[in-house]
Image 1 (cartoon, one colour):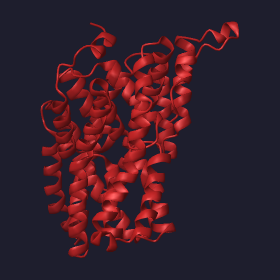
Image 2 (tube, one colour; image 1 turned 120 degrees about the vertical axis):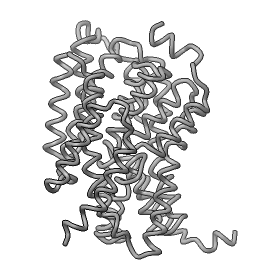
Image 3 (cartoon, one colour; image 1 turned 180 degrees about the vertical axis):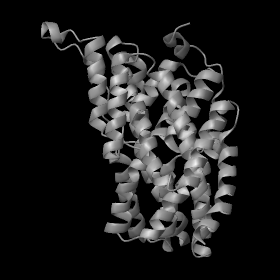
Length: 393
């Protein structure tokens, strides 16, 4: 059975099975977008075979093309594959909800107890272990998606180098990579005959008493700012951090520098998408209403940017030109993901102990195939709590 027939046939799983899967991934999935997209491939494509390789690649390409958090968009698309709008909505909510609840609880503790000094110790250990986790995840994704294709490898390496050099993901390079592979593998007829025959690709869309206690103008301001963050920032989780800093600290003065750094640390030591730090920031600014508005405003654009083009990806996904276009974007995306490992490592590997912890994580995951990442994260947190205070004295 080919990919098209498998997608069109009755799924081998229920809606609630995939919703529960994403609820669990949102609860236990550490490592940020690089690791999360690999977990989805490992669990849903390789192990359970709920999703075809082609559907996964289409989802990853669409998530990389559209602005917003990569892992959240891919979860929404994979929910859409067999259960359309309802599946996309429920899987997206299930994936984001656990980490949102965790950061809101941490926000409450942060305000109540005057900061989280222990968080630096935890992040010291977890941050290093996460580098090992995402390095192994990037290796697996590279092997499965790039293969031995020389053109895809050239694109992959170029995007990895550019990501390391610029410490950002440049959206137009993903599109250029897709167009290049499209023109090489399945050149459109208008290149030879002068007629425009790229319609399939061009049809893709670009795109009460309680109320009296709320600070409505502030919530509106929060909503507008975080909607802009969700709608106009491309790349994986950490790509949104510079944008958030410019607005939250420099422009609106909602948080201090230290508070913002703590907010990013919260995102890194909690499971689920890194972008959920917006919930923590919103809570510090305006309590629970602020957290809800910030999270909703950030994730709503990425939801719309996924479900609106999704039917077109499904309809035209088997056209040779579109397949080539998706392969090019996927190679670029995986290259950028590999480059981001180095970018994040520069911030997390700060001394010999963290370097050793990252290498130990890589070795363990390489040798012990069934080792669960949450166990490594928990152990790294304990190591950080023990070692970090000793280094500071």
